[in-house]
Length: 219
Image 1 (cartoon, one colour):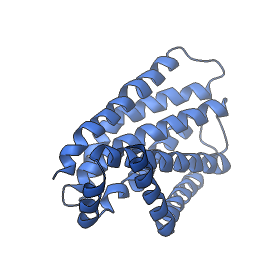
Image 2 (tube, rainbow, N blue to C red):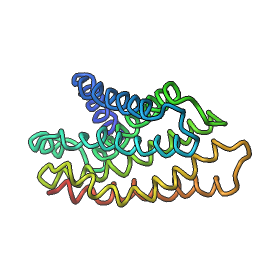
Image 3 (tube, one colour):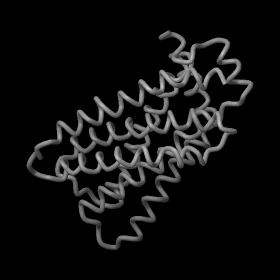
């Protein structure tokens, strides 16, 4: 199981290196979006605006980065994977790959935000940790949505249609949680919110993906 997951993960990484235009396209999307925000705010945005803009951009970055994970797989290639790997190994490898990709994109976005829009965060290390956790959470949801959309005649629009209603509560929770890093004093309830995000929502999405994907796999 572990060897198959690692082999499938290695395959996705090698494909990413061979198709570098996709990766650079997402990075260009991030840079151009942050630069437009920089031009739109002659005066630096306040902490609440900065935080809200950051997570909204994270949402659209994840849609662009994660959507291709299943949509790029042709029917013939999926049939080949069906013959050599289990559905659990395949979905776990996709989850790991998208999590790593989204963590990288989240950190790039954070660096560009700090460079262009200053740094209103009081606790940079704490906010960076929340950004990593948030990137993982958002990528998990859209990985599952991408798997479902890939079976619906490769319709990428379904990812946004199905994913946004599910991701909105998660995004609001991340915005509220990240405000802790903007305050000098630790706010009560932050640990409970983080536990709800990681121990509740994230675990639930992973379990749903592992349980439901075999039924999509057989289609």
